Length: 114
Image (tube, rainbow, N blue to C red):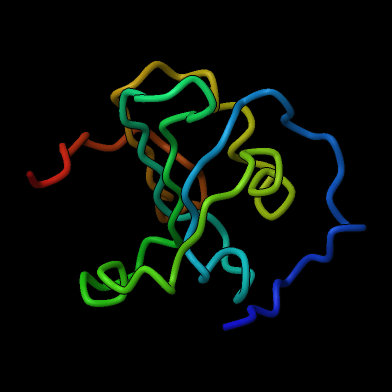
């Protein structure tokens, strides 16, 4: 199934290069919602940043459907939501969520279920 991304390849600028790959949901890349929750696990491969970016209102059912997310270069997601850039070097494990003022702030880290 083809996705209609909110940004075209020509729209992507070098904002946060060299961070590796990440997972992001379609709510960000297709629906153009801001990153509302970001979590970083310890990377298991050199090209993996450990970051996962979500709008923050995805249901478990939505997340369980692999067609709703993809693997992207972190730079791509930084183009969708530049305010993540300042947090990208935070050591894993960590999490951030958007507060009522619209700022990404530290959030309690929840390890993924086994």
